[in-house]
Every structure is written in structure tokens, then in C-alpha cells.
Image (tube, rainbow, N blue to C red; front, side, top):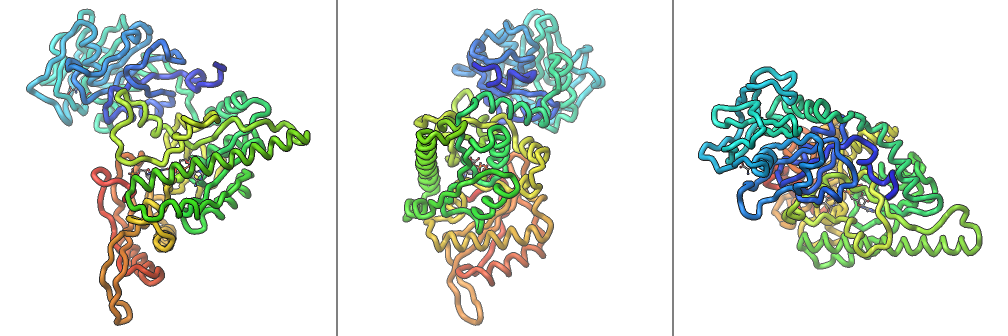
Length: 536
Ligand SMILES: Nc1ncnc2c1ncn2[C@@H]1O[C@H](COP(=O)(O)OP(=O)(O)OP(=O)(O)O)[C@@H](O)[C@H]1O
Ligand SMILES: O=c1[nH]c(=O)c2[nH+]cn([C@@H]3O[C@H](COP(=O)(O)O)[C@@H](O)[C@H]3O)c2[nH]1
Ligand SMILES: NC(=O)CC[C@H](N)C(=O)O
Ligand SMILES: [Mg+2]
């Protein structure tokens, strides 16, 4: 493999092994916040398959019990890596269980806040006084410490709240430093990652962009070409800018108009990408194809699958068209340094990757994200995903660094299946038009009120119900628009936004007056979970 192919070969990397805890991605967030690069992989990977030598390893928590049949365990090779290892909760229990200690279900469970007493000096607790408030979530406990380990901290109910074997460089804590409820959790993680592992905090977005451009150039080589799925969303736009900087006109950006984009979206995206970013974007009008296939379909999952598959089809066709064009040029000798299309660019982010690394396979399917990753299996193109290792806020930081318009960088995410999953029930051109107009007014008013940046995502959905109203003294029997606005950092959980009444009043008035077919507007006050951000 080329030396530049893996980001993990360029930065000091902490390896996080995931045992399936809901909190594992937070460990990754916290380590990245320290400026240290980390990768999250399934707990049962073969250590010999690792493409890099980590500076340290963190073992996550888990819903399982180490002693239960079928519970997940690490490849024992991990203990021979000779780098520091930190076990968190289940991770600690895994250390005890595999090193001759004992773990049992305990009648005193600890959920929530606890105070630990630090009873021994330890590098892990450097800069932290003799006690610390932590957040616990466990029902099992170590009942026998392996030999050569010592207790560093305890609580009234957990005698082994923190343990270590300094010679073997193995550390374990029963509490969760990755959650903000453990106030000094970040200090502890820094002590481990920087102090004990010696990882350099050189994971900055400046260095990332330069190295990524260089990595892409090496990967693509001097003549190959790249086709890119670009939606105008922040992820694919920034991926496209990086690609364009790396290989210039050998990059072909393609936007598919699937007939369920927002009002004026395709034109605006084309304008923005061409004028502001110098990216050559082809818009393919496939609206009729998509809407034709969606006719008569009201099941949300079916809609998503139809759209996902049609995306692939349209994309492949466009790839073939560009290929033919290039072949002609090659025959005529006018291709310059243009070779064949060998790569496909996508705006995939790390959360998408994380969802598929769990040791027990992807978590329960709640929604099939129209995932262009599905292209992988039967495509001859190799994938390039420059942002695959990044979280959304890191992508936004890159956008700011690259001087990309603030408006674009802070754009609310827009799902690939677009308005089709915001028109509940059957998607017809008329229904799409109603939702589109209402959405436009909604977002316009949010912007006017200066609230756009405070909200993480907002949109209007069209409900498949009719309600009675009275307009101009006449009875109406029309549809209902639901307004959704949420705040969130990671889009995995979200709160509904407390929209000021005055603004709601204005929006409701405008939608009912300006959008034919709507006589009621409601505001969605459900958080995620139990609801989700999109209605379908
Ligand atoms: N209409 C489209 N045309 C071409 N590619 C698309 C389209 N919609 C989505 N994609 C592709 O699917 C990927 C995933 O979509 P997603 O909405 O998650 O990301 P995004 O649109 O780049 O950013 P954002 O999350 O901010 O909307 C995009 O990065 C892009 O590669
Ligand atoms: O590109 C996408 N393709 C999809 O199929 C898709 N489904 C949901 N989303 C976006 O994901 C975030 C979480 O949405 P949910 O709470 O509805 O699952 C929100 O930001 C949603 O807009 C999608 N994005
Ligand atoms: N949060 C965890 O890792 C819990 C580990 C184990 N399931 C317990 O209850 O103790
Ligand atoms: Mg999008």
C-alpha cells in the first residue's frame, strides 16, 4: 500500500476498540478535541490486520457482561502491542476478566453521579485532587483484581473504580470520562492520551487539508479522472473543493436533480459552485425519472430505496457518458493529461462510518439512509472520501479555513431523498410543490429573524391528512404543514427548538396565505429520541 493511503499513517493515532456502547463515539470526539487523531474500530478486529501502529488503545464500554456467553472480546494480540491501554467500564472489566481477575453481577448497581476517592498517585489522575465527581453506568463489578494491578481510586460501592498496572501500561476505570457529566473527564483522557501514550496533538484542520490534497494527488496519479456526487450540501461541497484543489479539471462534479430538491436549489448550487469555488458542475435533470418511480409509493422505506437505487443508476450513466467523451478525446489525441475515470468522490463523514463498524454489524435499521456507499459492491470505480475521518464540526472548520462562504459552511443538512421524505404518503409533483413552497417561506422567515445559525436543521413537512378550515367565509378542506426545527451537535440526538411565538405567527400566516392547498400549520415539539429529525 502506498504510504500516503492511510491518514492513520500520517498522525499519531489512538485506537478505540468498540464493544457496542452508545457512548463510544463520544470517546472519539473527546480524543479529537485534544488535537489527537483517533480511529474507532470494532473490538474484535484482528490486531495483525491493523494498518498502523497506535500510540495507545482505549477499550470502550458495552451493554454486555464480560462473563456472559457470546459477549464480545478483544483479540489477545492487543495485549502484546506494548502500548498503553485504557479500559473504560466494560473495557476495565475486559482487562480484569482476561488477566486472571474476576467480574460479577453486583447487587449494588451504579447509574449516574458518584464520587471517587483517589487513593494512590497515578499519572492518570495528574492535576486532579484527591476526589472527583464522575458518571457511572454499570451493573457488573470487578470482584478480584488481577495480580500486579493496584487500586488507584474507589467509591463507597465500587472498590475498583480505577486500577493500573504501570509496568504493563494497562489502566482501567469503571466510570465514563467521555461524558460531560464527568467534569474532569477531559483532563483524565488528556493524561492518558498525551501524558501516558505520548501522542502528539498535531491533528489540526490546517494540516489535514494540505495532507489530504497531497494524499489525493498520490492516489489518483497524474492522469486518472474523478467523478463526484455533489449535492450542494456542506459535506460534498467541501469534499469537492479539496478534490478540485488537488486535481483541477480532472474532477467532474455531478448534481442529480431528483425532482425533490428545494425551491431553486439546483440553479443556486450550480451558480455557487461555479462562480465561488470554480468547480465545474453538471446538473442532470432526472426529475421525471425519480417522480415517475415514486408514483403510487407511500411507504417511507420503499421511497428511500427507490431514490437510492435511481441515484446509482443516473450516476453510472453519467460516468459512462464522460468516459465515452474522454475515449473520443484520447482517440483524437486531444485529451491532454486526461485518462480514464477511475474514482468516485463522496462526501461521507465519520458518523456514517462509525455506524457500520460496530462488532455486531450495523445497528438496527431505523431508516435506510440513501447511502451512495451502496455503489461500492458493483462499481468499478474506487471510492475517494476525503472527509471519511471527520465529524461535521471538523468539516465546517475546514470550510472556514478554505474561505468557503459562511452561508454554505453553516447550511442546514438536507437529506439525499429530499422532499420525498418530507411529503408523507404518496409523492406527487403537486404535493412536492406544496411542501417546497412552505419550506421556502419557513426558512426565509427563520433567516429574517436571525435564527438560522441557532437552529441545526429546520424544514416543513406536508402531512397526509386533511382538515377543515374557513377562508373568506367559505369552508376549506385542505392539508396540514408541520414545521420542524431542532438543535443538535451530532444529529444522533436532538431537541426541538423553542421558536418564538411571534415568528411562528408570521410563518403560519404566510404559509396559509401564500401556499394553495394548506389551511393549517402545526409546530413539532418532539425530541430525538423518541422521534427522529425527519418525519420519514
Ligand atoms: N442530489 C444529489 N446529487 C448528487 N449527489 C448527491 C445528491 N444528494 C446527495 N448526494 C451525495 O450523497 C452524499 C450524502 O448526502 P448528505 O446529504 O449526507 O451530504 P451532503 O449533501 O454533502 O451534506 P449535508 O449533510 O450538509 O446535506 C453527498 O455527500 C453526495 O455525495
Ligand atoms: O443524506 C441523507 N440521506 C438520507 O437518506 C437521510 N435520512 C436522514 N438524513 C439526515 O440525517 C439526520 C438524522 O435524521 P433522522 O433523525 O431523521 O434519522 C438529519 O440531518 C437528516 O436530514 C439523511 N441524510
Ligand atoms: N457501561 C458499561 O460498559 C457497562 C458494562 C457492563 N454491561 C455493566 O453493566 O457493568
Ligand atoms: Mg445533503
